[in-house]
Length: 100
Image (cartoon, rainbow, N blue to C red; front, side, top):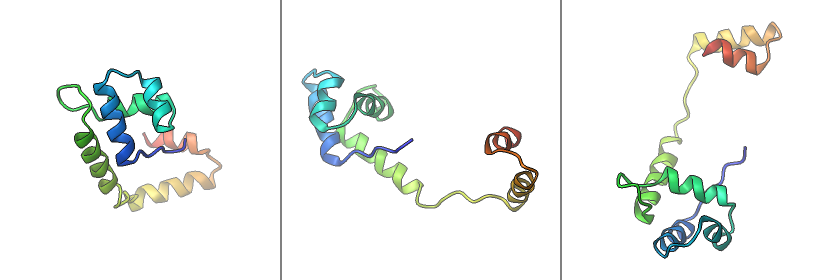
């Protein structure tokens, strides 16, 4: 699944159009994104009052981006187990199920 990133300007447009009562479809057309992107943005970045605010949404996006700069590392014993399962012919789905 391809990640879709929104710009500051697009978030501002979403916020302004929401305040005007525009539909998600209209907002999506205005910013050039799919309506599912708009829907997810509104749900993911609503503030604690349940409303969408450009400033809050942008802050949350920047926090998430910053937290992903340091990728998680596999522990040595888990890496060894994964490699052993691959050598035994296990599929990625089987390995994931086993490690959960």
